Length: 106
Image (cartoon, rainbow, N blue to C red; front, side, top):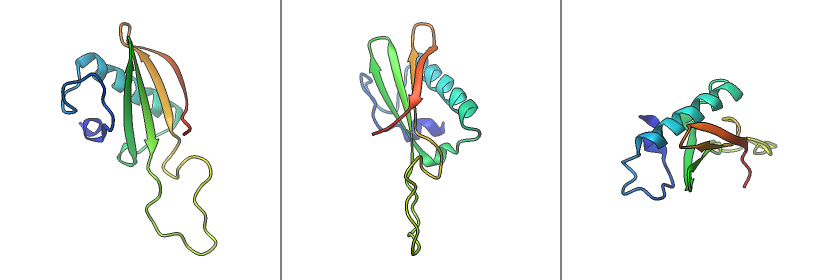
């Protein structure tokens, strides 16, 4: 699964190569909702960060920065990456329901 290879930060799990089924289902829900808000995001250009707090899983999609050399008079985008927006979803693990979401900012 592409998402498993992109995990950056995993807390409360024995190994990054193992994800409990409920957390995997929560990630799948977040991916589906992300696709509704931003049509066809290319997850190959995203890092997925996870943070668990009690019975909630926070899933953040962070777009990569462009990797090309800037041309003269060209600037990096001020807003979202050229690959799309950064988004955070908070999923209630007991009911596998999105509690809230927002555009992520550092």
